[in-house]
Length: 325
Image: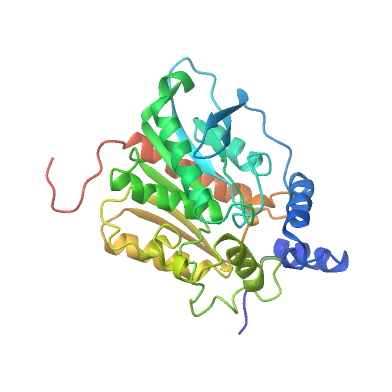
């Protein structure tokens, strides 16, 4: 099957092959984590200047949870807030590795972005990340005044594994298990950990993040097959998506998770949720964190930030067709 590949992506993959960069899944988890942390900044443009960056710790279910609070606007008023969960297959990454994305969104959306440092597998398998994510979101909502954020304008977002967590929190908010988010910003989210879509194996052949990579992540995060059918692992299996907040869903054609993300977008729309579905057929999984090499990253983040500001502008006015004011 012929697949279009963005020239920036082709050049990046060729450079990695020439440099004999080992696949993540060939490494021990702790080594992969250290390599990821060491190289992530080199893959991104210089950090954009923001008003403030503050690291704090809060009590979690069984540990301290780190929060990186990034304010993109110098304002005495309470800012709308995006609670962001980093990607990295539930095994890698941190607020530091994704600070470039978070700063860009904070500036472009004129908001506060709070990045959550949840526990990672394999040391802390499912559902540790979900528990930390929920605890962090609940604490942020309860401490909105202290954080100088608008507690009625909280959005959830994340990339890959972080998109998985954001999706789950949106469901928990709808069901009143958590404060309700008003928007979900999902970048190539993992929504079906059964890993069984028709294109899962073939979509990312030759890419740096392949089906083998994703399976390696999931095997470490959630070893038990039965648990992968839990909606807190595979949110696409939730009985209903009715009543969820509007969503921005980015999917990529050169991504093992691309098809499940598109299925999730279609189901959101079919069940009455406003969704902006952006599909880039020539991009790979994880490209937003590779902005130094892949030019499309900055444009996609700018568009996502615009949709986020639109959600805040329309906050409180969500309706279904047939409803009257």
